[in-house]
Image (cartoon, rainbow, N blue to C red; front, side, top):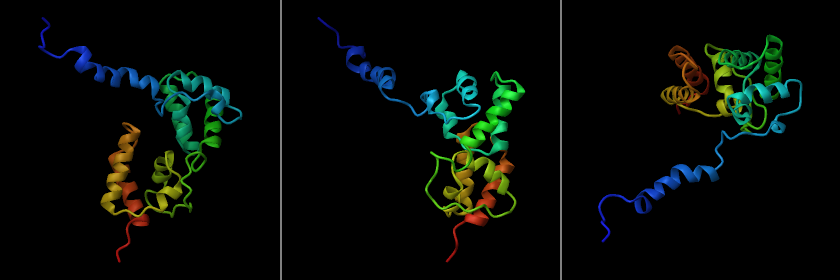
Amino acid sequence: MRSNKGFGFRTHLWPLFALCFVAPIFVSPIWAQAPANALPAGTGKDLVAVACTQCHGLKLIMSLRDGPVGWRHFVNDMILRGAQLNPQEADTVAQYLAQNFGPGTSPMQSGLKSEPLPPGDGEKLVESHCALCHDLGRITTIARSKEEWNNTVGNMMARAGTNVATQDEILAMASYLAAHFGRKLS
């Protein structure tokens, strides 16, 4: 006679096993590897395809947006983490990334009208941090309260990873955004 005590693998744990171990095989995550031929042509493409994929996929790189200074920072940071690039190669990679994955370049365009950011305290922080993922049209067409901008910027910086921005920088960006793109009181 068979005992009905406890959980059996076949009856109770199989769905959990399938969800955790089998399903991911059939679902393509957003961080999956993009082929090297997905990179735009140009000087530096081969260096990016080889040096950067030692630790992560190309989709990660292709989803980021930044200007020349920001990309140089990323390249330097990756070298500190182990990317095998000499100084000349690092310059080539940074130039390639800035040219092909700068702010507002496809495929990350929102389709919203983009105006230059108005000058003010926090402008450069917004350009260097927010434009990593969003074009300026996405940022300048959204009206949020100061509290909403504080929450949004804090959440975005937390999602970007640790040590992306200091608390003072987050507050400066949120204050700038609220001052220039805050909700207008009627």
